[in-house]
Image: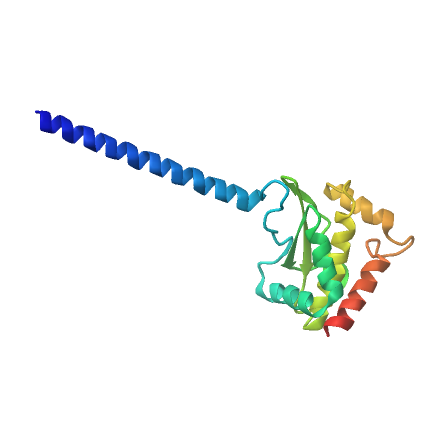
Length: 187
C-alpha cells in the first residue's frame, strides 16, 4: 500500500512540474509575442507593410516602384508613418481611367483602410508603377488629414482640395506631378 501511495505522490509531483514548466513556457511565449507585436517601451515594434496587395502582378509593381523610384519609395515611407493601410487591388474604375483611389474608407481598430483599384491590362509595365504611384499620392493626401475618417469625409476632402470646375473633381496637381516623376524614375 505504501508503494502505491509513493507512486501516486511521484506521479502527482511530476504532473505539477510539467504543468508549471508548461505555464512558464506559455508566459514566456506570450511575452515574446507581445514584444514582437507592440515593441518594448521606447522602441517601436516591427513595421507592418502599410501598402499591400494580394495580386502578384501588383505586388511586383509595388516592389519595382520602391526599388526604381525615389519618389515612389518616399510615398511608401510616408504612408508607413500614418495610421493608414492601403490595399492595391485589381479592379476597374469609372471614366476610363487606369487606376483610382476608391472613395471608401473603413476603420479597423486604429487603422484607416483605403483601396486603390488598378486595371493592370490598361497600364502595362512602367505605366502600372506610375499609375500606382499617382494613386498612392492621393492616399497620402487623405491619410495626412487625421479628420478624414469616413467614406463621406474622404469624398468631401477631395471635393475641397480638387480644382474648381474640374470634371475630375478628385484630381490634384500633386498626384499628377508624382505620377510623372515616378514614370520618369522607374521607366
